[in-house]
Length: 484
Ligand code: PLP
Image (tube, rainbow, N blue to C red; front, side, top):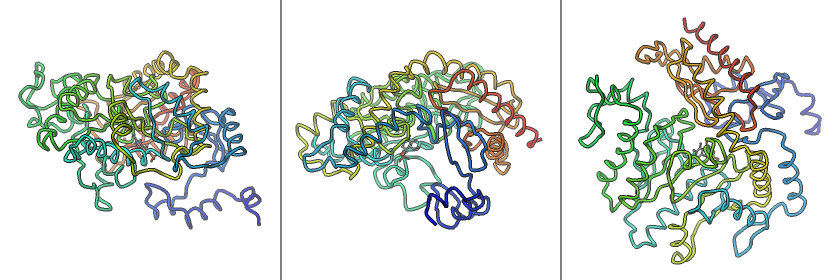
């Protein structure tokens, strides 16, 4: 039977059986998935998916944080088709280039912050962060300071799944497999106010020179400390780490403006400016991982602009093509670019698909469409604030300990008891219970521990936000009924 015919005649059960027999999914317990069966997604349009049983699902996660312009955009489909016909592939090694890669490099220099005039293309965000490790270390070699090789990142950060990406990331479950992290990566704690302020008091972390505590402080970091004060405390963990490692050994700090996979942890407004100040003070490079927060997600083109940082390097992927085709890269700021270009000689690094012409053609069409539709401004002025109002109203729900959003990224903290934000026992798996209800009710929301997170396509309308909020409320009610 030819493949096309087979696709048309297969039932959901057929798909699930073939899937379980052959397909090892990412970040998945293979045996457990084989028992439960996958949900088979067959089509999508705008912000809605359709599964193999014909159920319509509102995709509040933009695929995997990537479908910024929504599904079915003809301009992207046409760009790919045209480029596939004209020149489906040529590489960028050996002094060659293709028009889409050159034009995309030009356009990226226009839409990114002014310090960025150069780009290094990769095939994914993980490859982008591998490139960061190599580039940062190469930069310090060129500066005649090869001892500066340590990169500092954060617990519960996510920077991809390659050896370097997973090492930069601070996911303990990932580090437990395959001998990670690789040498030369250090982690500090995340700027998660709820965790530090409410659930895990750590008085020893508060040092002399930290901002004064508020009235009523019982001695626990966070209790009696405002979000803004906590932002400064958390940023200064970087300074402590730099001094502990030794300034002469530290190359860079990397962080996501908002930790996405870690549960949409939105840092206090004071955090990033203080991180910037510390990096400047010690001359270390600042890297912003914009794989999720890039291309309008937070209401500015890049998350570092929302949070007031001026990074030296920026990783991007996902939203650059709205996920229609894989592409990633690193924006290289003037400080690093000058060293690499003027004094670096050959940079011994690159991928077959660095600057893939079809991916670059799709990215060009995607960025132009984001501009034409004014999506960044829309997130900033209209749908972002509208979502924030909806999330604010969720705080009244008995299961919700906190709800916050920034642009079109949001998280709802599920708690057993709102008083003191008392968490459910881990064995309840409250997030997964809620996620199950979402699946059945036709909503894709992701569970990270006890945080339910969303990042819908930037084309979402106010009416669709209303529809999404009604579904979220319904799923919270169903989860509450289960939890009682
Ligand atoms: N960096 C961040 C912040 C991410 O969220 C991700 C993926 O979710 C990555 C890097 C890795 O990107 P990729 O999965 O394209 O390798």
